[in-house]
Length: 180
Image 1 (cartoon, rainbow, N blue to C red):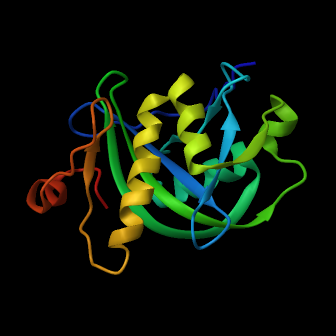
Image 2: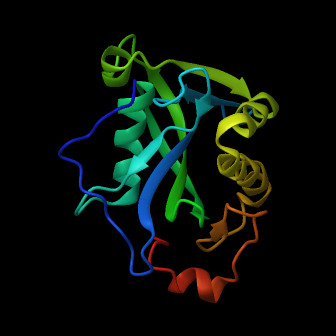
């Protein structure tokens, strides 16, 4: 069953990319497991929870809202992994890390469309995402990479997720309209 949002307004940046936000949900500081949810279009496949930024909404708020709706979890929002650009679908997704502190027994998408959630090791999640959302694999690659940079200050990054990720230099990343 496809999830319909009749009152939803899509927001675009100045380059015509749809603005989105997502969370890589982890349950431990070592970030060795991530939470994926079933796709609304193809429920046998797994995706990273996320969705469109609403008018007057900050991407961090979108990420928290989408995770609650799609995965039924709450937690503390951590670092931003960057803005991932998908040229095929013309969207830019700002991706955050969330440390999950609570998993609800029932949540909006579990009731309305039967969505499921499951914890995966990073390697298993990468394999699952390769089947349906290969661009989302770059979120997890950046999660692993950013863990080594966590103690160093790193400016916002724009990552092209249509092709292998290339970190933009600080000047162009700072000029990006979607980098917070």
